[in-house]
Length: 182
Image (cartoon, rainbow, N blue to C red; front, side, top):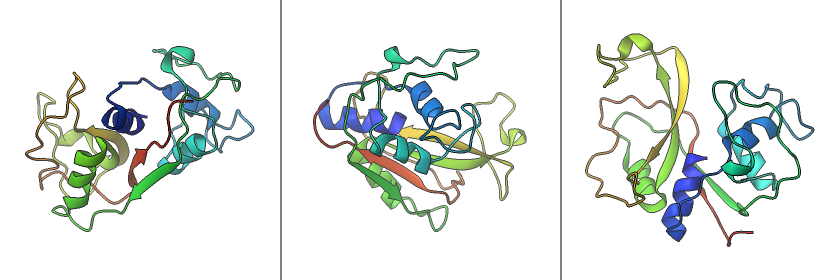
């Protein structure tokens, strides 16, 4: 959802907060259009794309909030999506650690991309402020890289994904929203 929210902000200048809870639940095995995963068992970019393009979402976070420490596994199927998502762009995997041009350009044009990388807790520094994964890894982690500041502006991008950050293959993507709010 971060990629969609950021792209919407880039396109319209309006910040939105869409419901991750609604997406995780409606994509789960508890719902007729869902997939084989449980509501808190993870997912992937293709599942997110199906949720958005089939017209299930996005819905507002206020209509179906993600509450911690235990998010709800039940969402209404009667919530009205607030946008029509008519295009989702999947970026090709990088060919190596210096293959960043398309990722940088997409960040500047769209505002955010979703990536995944392998994570190994032992690769964090002692104060947990930096992470370096040499070759290999153990657990895939999806994150959204955004070019927006917390105030919604897009600062000048000087360096994105330095070569020491090993972002591995996997279908990274950005979402483009077409049309006006529904």
